[in-house]
Length: 292
Image 1 (cartoon, rainbow, N blue to C red):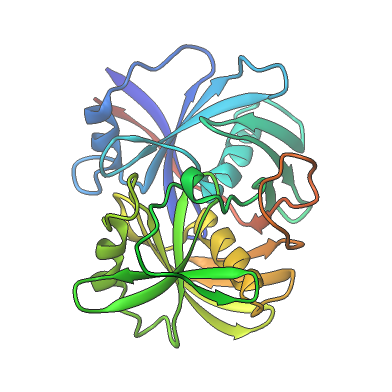
Image 2 (cartoon, rainbow, N blue to C red):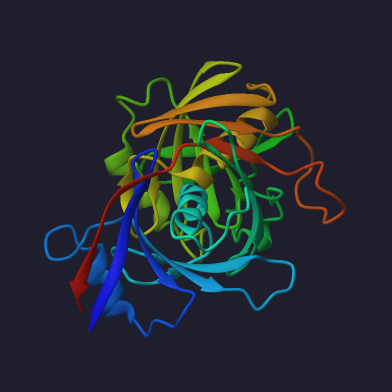
């Protein structure tokens, strides 16, 4: 079958976006991997499938699939920004504020005057069972509000803050992201026994209270140029460690994101005061058709 697609990127995190609002797309994991393959397909970190919403609270729904494994994943902040430009460019809506349903979230997205998109990423989750994280026998270090858990990586111990932004993250502070052992420690953290659903590993360098540099080794994908939920997780962790202010610029290898969080105790379900806001770019790269 032939499938029309749009290739997009947000701060270097790239996506194949598919329109399933008019008719469902029956694509299996093999087809998703083919789309994500950078040599034999289109090439992307993730595949976004835009659908009609069955939820009265949402304007649209979309599903997210890993470009390397073809598996469905929970959340993607950079993809959410691309989604806004996609539905507007395709004439599916003229709204500047949209609500979209994902597999485990209802997100509010706002298109800014300069073309940037602000995504309400909802509240961070710190409850270990909901991340999920199985605590090791050793006790965590306490740093202001944060708990830093020791992970044994086969002779090396690192201390990470663990939380969920709709998907699991483990964040450690490093002196310099350029020399951080991302390629070595990233897969060891991703597959660590303490994370039953595996985890995204973040390496954060604090430049100032309003500026960090970040690299993220993502589940299934390896290191990507940018990770929106990873940027949110890093800033939340840094604020809870007492290292950062409420508004932080995050420089990734693919570009800059701005994250805002007022601080707090995580997902209480009470109101929006504890939500994380992420603002950044989204761009269409090209469009085409592929035989699957």
